[in-house]
Image 1 (cartoon, rainbow, N blue to C red):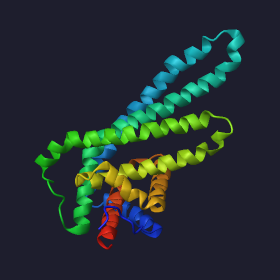
Image 2 (tube, helix red, strand yellow):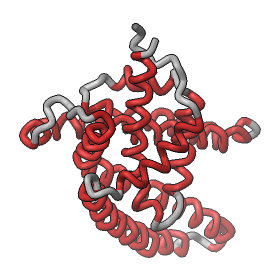
Image 3 (cartoon, rainbow, N blue to C red):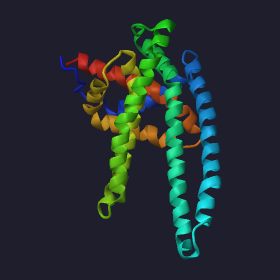
Image 4 (cartoon, rainbow, N blue to C red):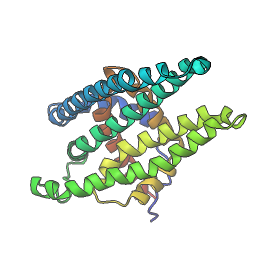
Length: 252
């Protein structure tokens, strides 16, 4: 039997998993693992907003005002560019911090969803085992970040090259969707201590479904307030997706 899930999960199943994932995240069995990350996100993102506002008011505005008169035409453009870098860079850094802090809870949530769907607990799932695994969980999050950064740099470079940059929106969409799928499906894989490369192989064998999963999650994350509930719902849906892929491998 292949180690890769070759029988693709249908798009209809993906949409159903995402809808059911939201319901599952609010169920009494999973609610606590949804609420704690939301509280973490609120605190961290509040800090991000304060940092961004302070950086713009303390550095960007004085910088543009200090330009000589003959460069005044660049003031608006420069202020917009620097502000965009600070906003997106700040949000990415703080979102990454929030995700890393919340990752043990998302791992517990994925475990609970798997148990509800299969009736079988994940091996080594006691509280003591989970606490021992926290360094490994954080290491996995850093591994995902290191996977993301080179691809992010490629997208930025393409965006800056005239003519070629016409494809940059498509590249951004593909990268964002792919990374969302990796982020929220990986908790179930990591609970089973499955290698990062094996997880990627499964998702690549379900390219279209994986893209649709990540695309929907990414769109929902962009909606204010709604985005507080999306990560936990996506973890629940990603765990169901994991189970579907393992089932397909078993049927080969």
